[in-house]
Length: 210
Length: 388
Ligand SMILES: Nc1ncnc2c1ncn2[C@@H]1O[C@H](COP(=O)(O)OP(=O)(O)OP(=O)(O)O)[C@@H](O)[C@H]1O
Ligand SMILES: [Mg+2]
Image 1: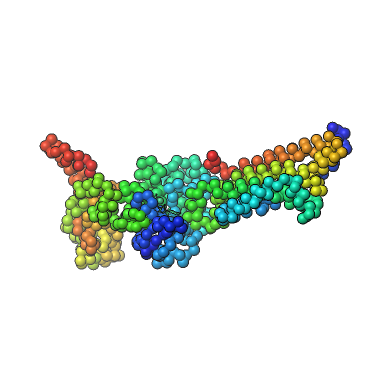
Image 2: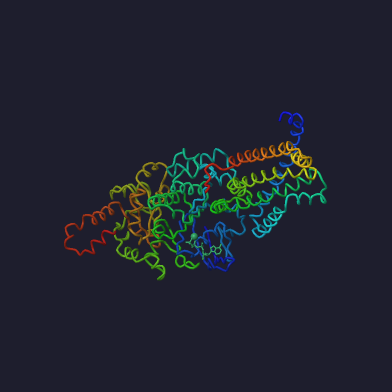
């Protein structure tokens, strides 16, 4: 154990950092794209089913295959890995944003509109606060997915804790495999916990939840 | 003034919800839309703040076609209360009350002051300001719903079955409150209900709707007196119609020929008339006996240096038309403390005066008057008396 840390400790810190970096950038992009898109879809019912269908199909592409697909388009390295993870993060956020917004009590929307809120004010002051917990749950789900899948990113030369795991597998060094897997698991739990706290925070006090 | 001119609404699926209605709602009037389910009440009401756009015809407010107005700005000028209260669960009572003032970017102090004042008007203390709607009872929630619609001084308030979900006692209290606020603040109210008692209690005018059309639009008294057709009759119900025929009108109890003076009477002469007739108030009419106002002894005394004629100091007076049901007048006298209420005919000519004393006579007759005869009159008759 001590020996492992002596040999690989600094490398591990670097890989954890890389891993987090790739995942969080992908997740951040996912949020920036999927939340507004999800809101937009609630305003254009016809597009909504199509979009969510497409996102669901993307989700079913095996992760390794999607990563491999990135190579001819974007080459190898971090960038294509981030793109692939970003695509994966989209669906849960998109779907939750859409359903969360749709589930807002129609009486509230009616009252707000009837009192003279613009569409933007309605979204910002009523629908988003009401849908926030559901949206956050989607982000949280994507967050843990992305951390797990980011381990595969090493496959196309993006680095991260996947380096340990793949090296361990190739050269048969069990310590490396474990030294990669455990931090990935801890990271996933950590991200889940942190985003869970955020979810709690954005849940409006006294919101009627069923 | 809100004016509907040949307004129709056909929904996309072909439902003709509102069918060529024309309707004028005057400023300060409390108009109740009533009808069976699906008769188009909500649709009619929601066309006023453009929550629904009409498919043909024209709706105007104070002469301006509402389609020429920005819908968002229009809605901010019109209070809106729905049955489910529509209070925002993630906002405090305070934030809920000042929603529209906030949209209008009022100053903080003004919003605070408004919220506190309105809360006080509905007998709720400032401790409620920081609560959340879920921490209030249903009746309290709807109180907030009502004052929220008044907070930005909206002249027009739309209410869609606001009290439908409340228990009878709470509903009664809120009806009283809304009617009082409306009269006091002079707001125009369009109120949707399918409860005839509620309509009769609140309305200055009732519009009875069926299948998207307005069947009759008149004052409660006139509708009771002359139902337009069988539909209206059945809607009113046998009970109410029968009750009506046994009910007394103001004409039966009013004092005829109350003491009056004309507008150009000097204060000195007015005092003399008071002394000669041993009264402390005089009704002021023009030379055709059309009621203009009222002067009382105090006003004359206070102004005897400044004013020459009663016209200069007379005050507006609350009056009723002849034919008005005594019960509604009695209600006003008792609840609002009028000493007496003048009765005028169609042309505004003063006919008589209902005084508190005449109410006492009635009450005396109903409760004590028949005592000795109880044995001798038929049972039905006593029953009728009781329902009064
Ligand atoms: N969005 C809509 N699309 C199609 N038809 C509608 C729509 N809204 C209402 N309608 C129909 O229009 C008619 C009038 O509806 P409206 O809501 O105005 O009735 P209402 O008098 O308020 O009834 P209730 O007392 O049940 O509230 C009904 O037949 C209803 O089914
Ligand atoms: Mg309705």
